[in-house]
Length: 297
Image (cartoon, rainbow, N blue to C red; front, side, top):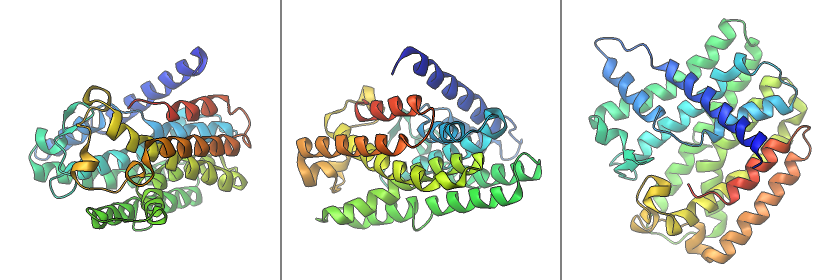
């Protein structure tokens, strides 16, 4: 990524982090501990990919006032963080570390971590609703955003993918099933982020192109994740490597091998770049998409 685009990415992440921190500034005396747990996980770091995608699609489709919709883009990160808290719980993947720090249920009581995830989930939809009540976006637009995001989280989205993932542990599954699993578990929230950016711009005719881009990017992103679980380090990933193997999960690497997985990730990245070429001023997102293929965390 060139220096100008790297600076833009840094500015995006800084603005996103500042916005996320504002969500948990008020900590009521009696239930403040859950706000502390929410903040702990929200501010643990991360690429902030999903809100960045939302903001970029908004900008590429002609959106002018990033500040006015920043909190809506951050609502997607609230959902993502809720999913990570719940993923790490003992009843799920049972991971002790996330982003180089103890998982939420290790830093706080397990029941508080569970409730922190629940609270982040519901807060996301409160943020979108409030944007309509404040008059910053039309009510119809808010309904569209809530519909897209809730579907991306639900049975036909992230949660559905997690269910298939859990039920597939220790089993041999075919590539078609794995593609469905990951299009739900990883791809659905990435698609929601891209489509929500288009909705916020009002350029609804570009939704299919954004969804096609997200589909290709989401699968490439997951393949790279699978490769990093084999070849990454704790310092890079912030969590122990080899967890997929320990939990007997079927991944792109176990099904296709490392070489073929890298080839497919590269092909999908090229497809994503093709879809993004339909948008004006796409240089930043094109570079970011290419960088995602070679990331180390």
